[in-house]
Amino acid sequence: MKPNYRNVKLACMALISSMAIFHLNNAVGQLAPNPDFLSGAKSYTFKSDESTSLRLHVFRSPNPSASLQPAIVFFYGGGWRQGRITHFLPHAEYLRNRGMVSILADYRVLNRHGTDARIALSDAKSAIRWIRENAAVLGIDPSQIIASGGSAGGHLAAATSVVRGFDSPKENLDVSSKPNALALFNPALDLPSRAEARRSVLGDFALEISPLQQLSDTSVPTLIQHGIDDRTVPFSDAQSYCQKLKLLGGECTLFGYEEADHGFFNKGVEDNRWFPITLERLDKFLVQLGYIDRLE
Image 1 (cartoon, rainbow, N blue to C red):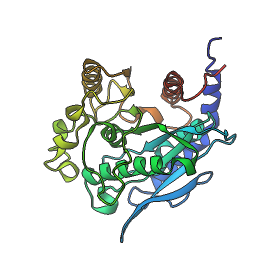
Image 2: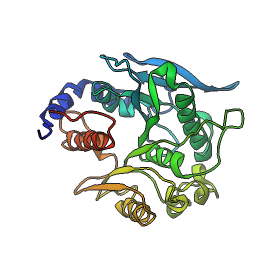
Image 3: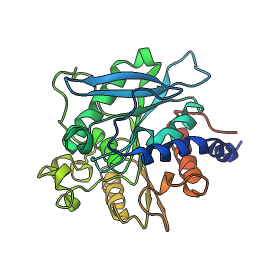
């Protein structure tokens, strides 16, 4: 029987209120700290020091299975300078209802913590390592962890897969911080090309943490959704990344969207034509991986 994705569209309509929360949080201000708790989620501190406490917000399925479930961890965008943890709240709520454990991850950014992209990458790796190390408690299959994100968050997700180093030394490095798959939205993948314009967060180390340049044959199945008319992160970056990954023997699926600019996939509330389309394609990617069942 062919999958019926009409339910995806219905679910998107039900998530309009969540998208309204996302935009309200953006309006509150990017300098405000991210919340310690989110409604419907269980929150955990995964990394802390004298001045900072970073949290994961874990959304479990309303119909939990006795078996371990796949997980997806989302990293919000904001140019490594700012950003709100609710960026992917609509996606998290949708996928929890599809039988996954959905996780929103915080990380340090310039405007709140005075940090650069290297620290953000270290935090992203810490998040995935903590999730895998605590998989049994969370009800997660440690071999089915997907990293996802948009823009700078897409960079962090991809970098956890392909960039070596930048691990926190106090952690158990025997536990891998590499995800098992990637689902990226307008990700920043070629950092040297824009390092000068973003020197405050990329310094002179852009090459070291750039997914395109660090990509090897050890990468994982990857889905990229990108606006063809993106004026912040060129669509050609995604094309170059996918092409290189395929040449190395990897799996990469790229969808380009005409007339779509940066952040197209969840801008707006009721009038966003891209949100249901991109969510449907994410759903199908997860089905292909065997992480969730097909919709009938």
